[in-house]
Length: 109
Length: 510
Image: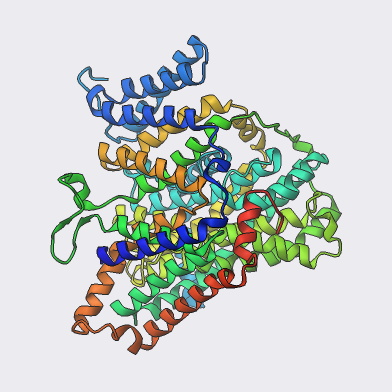
């Protein structure tokens, strides 16, 4: 079945390619937000790598701090407050109250 | 009928118990928040909050998730009316006249009409669900693997046909979803397929990381860089009551929207989006003053809002009675029910009547909760919208990571979400519908199992699918849909799907 599906998908791809002549050009789609998209992608990749190594709270706090401080250029106080409070509150809500186990990492955080 | 009423009484005895009532209330409240927040639609919302229900028994969990679903459907209308931002796709049509009413100083009336229309439509369509699901389940007991295979294939084809934009692209996305669903252990032979040594992929790709990636993360990737603070209209509590004229103008649209929404909801596809689109078009067609549409017509709010809420209940009919999800949201609900050890399908009503009828009764209760909750608390929800998007979206991303990780405690799921997010972002940019991918992922194991069981029954003869009347008829309907969907390629005109795609982009009214 996977082979049949792959062939069907190739067929659809070829048809979209052939009929795509009238579609707008790739540049016309508008990619103005690509810098934000790349930054978010990198932060999510960091979170996936660090989640079980550094623990939930440290990883989420660092990810939020990067997005707020470096990408959105928010002030130090806002960045620190939102990052720390969010990471702590989300951990408390899910791990402590709802008993969904979240990784703690080597520092117990 | 007497049996239905006694079953409903059983359902109400469960739904009105304090713990169930609490979870219905909590689900509706959280769902409304999810619907209000840009970037978190009902699909991503239900997926993200699934881990929060792990500690609950099946009835409470399902009641809460259903509350989130229809709460989100309602929450979407608040942002549409007050900010001209659809909190979720089904509220696109409400933006047009809802926001126009708000600019005329009738925001409160628009919100009340949307709430009352949603309540009436939601309650009426639950009656439809209650009456239709049991006989449908009885009929489905005649189904064997060939019939299920044909039904599931038809579900995918109808979804592709009913999606906005090109049917060719939607079919390609459904095929991609089916291919992704092939990853993992082959259920018949036990072989690992496309796992590349990653043990976690043995169980296949989960629907939660796919849904959150395609609908949550992709939305944020596409919108984070575009954040421009929209103007929020804040209605006062005393402005909430519509005038007698506005009530009169909304009565018939609510009735028509309810019937249309329920019927469209049963059919697979992005039912609530299509229901609101069709309802708007019907109301404009029937109106004595069609020129008012776009300028704040009451019917332009009442009809689509009733239709999308009615479709929400309609979508539960095939899911509960046949075990076949009719769109991406019911697919996630189906997965959620399975996580809690509930197998929706023809036997559910017989084997777990407390759950089925408790769920039905909780939908009535949920509709009342939404009505009570939303109007007085509209100020609170508006304040949530005042949180600047540059602060809101990093928090939503953190919730995406948390929600996806918590389902299986697996980092592999976070990677899958990330890849799906990038894929969803690129596909959105290029005009592809991503809903068929989610449905494909959920249906792939069912379709493959039904196909192979059918072929085992017939000694490998494919004629089994056409020689059995129900399977043959379903496949014939699917073939007709493909032909209808490809018609615009020949006629080169704009069909209704192309017009819907344009309307969703805000380029044209239907």
